[in-house]
Length: 314
Image 1 (tube, rainbow, N blue to C red):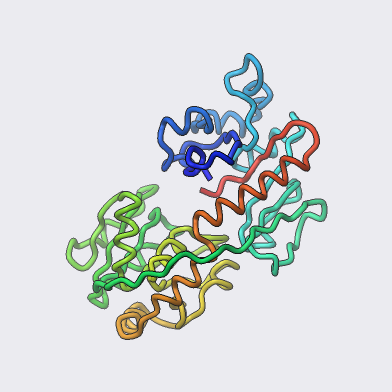
Image 2: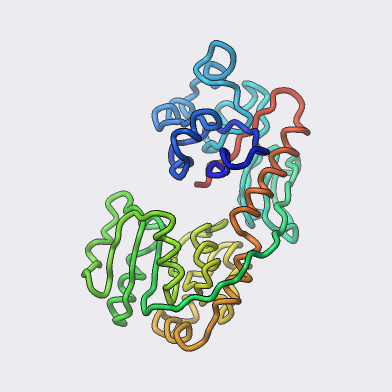
């Protein structure tokens, strides 16, 4: 949403969010549509700083329509300004909490299992984009944050054990010892890269890897790689991948195929169109359009101040 604020004149929301939510939004775009929340302010809100002191006439910030916000802050401030709480849980109908007023779900086939008072807003299906085939190079690629949750070291170890070249991009968090498994030949770390370079690496990779050891509600990086026709090698955990991954069609379940078996299959069979077809229903423009529609419905329905708190999932 944040990336499209300036480009789309129909988006008239003012968004208040942690800084990392706006990493891909330029300063000029932040100025009129986005209010950046630093870590100190986020901590203050968690500790009970009254949100009513921040917004409105004569206050530090103009009154926003949407707040992308950690749910701990939402609970502290719930009721202060009659704020509807919106929780994003992707596919996971069990991920919500009792304080939600609205829940955003990707797929209407899922029946939420919590919060009787919440209203469930479904995110619709898109029109596929144009498919383009690419020549594949002999490497696997992962672009994500690197920490214990993403389990990147296990991918690097598999690369070193099999001799399959692995290229890793993205920030290393919390002292995660990924570099101990980077030899500069079989395993290569390229640091944080641009969106253009990320898509280029995806476009020519044999596999996109993500052995996350937690239940992913959604993964934009997987969708971006699949949109370039790249099969995935993943831990099939969480309702998103349990539904999205079709083993042997658009990627491989790491519990069934090791890296060498998945890599060999991806090198000998062309999965590109199947990957693109799987990803096309979650393209960025379509998801932005779906979120716009959902946010507008919520704002129009809510009586009182047009405020939304959305659990930060960036």
